[in-house]
Image 1 (cartoon, rainbow, N blue to C red):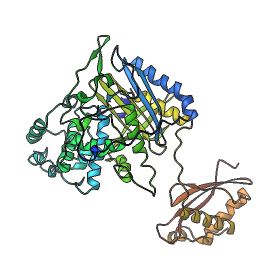
Image 2: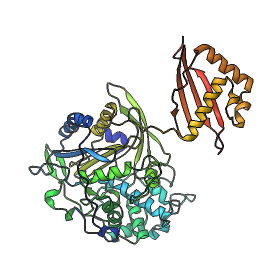
Image 3: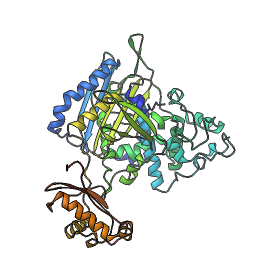
Image 4: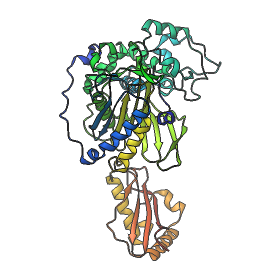
Length: 511
């Protein structure tokens, strides 16, 4: 079920109580915190962006949210949850379609952490019905679990077909798997989006955990995060709390029939609210940066950060820029998410969803601890364009700055050594790795430092380094007659030694 829109295209209930940990009461909801004044100031503009898109695309209702620094700072409902019925609120339940795949991927990674499966193993080890499949060529390798995660199993893109498989019974899915599938190409050759692949991952979760997929996700991930209104069985949700799905047809909204929960739920079956989903977004973003300290989530922080690890089949999307022109944007599919390098916003981790009656989008800036998401109740109406506009608006307003890299003790020591070398006029005043003087000897380096000093004059000693990592940094010193651009990088040895020590005149600062 589920339509994952490509990045380019994205732009143009509780279910029955689960066993396992699901029997625990969810943690109490935190008291709502006031949004920062700057986000409050932006709220009318952000709302207008989504409202305009909603009206232009004949969407009955929509909710969007902004999560920042671990909490929802803005949740707004627009329009109607049901035509002629209640307004959309943060408590309205929407199906989120392919954004469900993120839960599936994280469940697979959690089971991997527990030593219960390997991503590199053939998928047939965990789904025996796949063992007798006929592959497209005699030299095709077996489909691995990782292939299913990355959409590189060789299956055909199946959005039109996959959308309608949601209600398939477990027995029907078993028969489908036993019969085998035709291939678009041999496994591992390219990325081609597959709902069948993610449904198969759901079967792996069930088989490996010994618990029905939907119950495993609720019990091990959703309930521990306090997502009490999130599940898979839409018929278990009170009808008054739901956003009904519609299509726009012949100038009117037509109700889409609800599809029951079934074997393809792993690829698109989640129903949730904006309030619950904000908890999920906050949990994901909390995995960044890597750090010491308690790791108390339902999935380890390091594992969550792994969702951005792609399969290296990169495509390029052309995206319009404000004021004209386009941005060539590389996109790679990772593990339940697409990773996008955006010209304006930086690295975006995103996924869209579409389904009969629904469309959705989520965009995360993990290096800024900011996320934007939106749910709509019209067929395939993924609000990618307004979500990106909102992210840009937050970025331009200074509400999504990238997290600074701290200066480690080791880098501070390397920078101090670079300062000593500068003051002495001699690179050998710093602890140098073996390559440095082999690359350029000591006499040449002394001459280079002297030439830079003669051009720029005196340089104050209290200027900061710009860390690129715990091992490397750059600096730009303002001096009497110009600027010095420099770089220092430690060698990968326990004892401090520099493999890079460079000083140069910044050409933009002197005649």
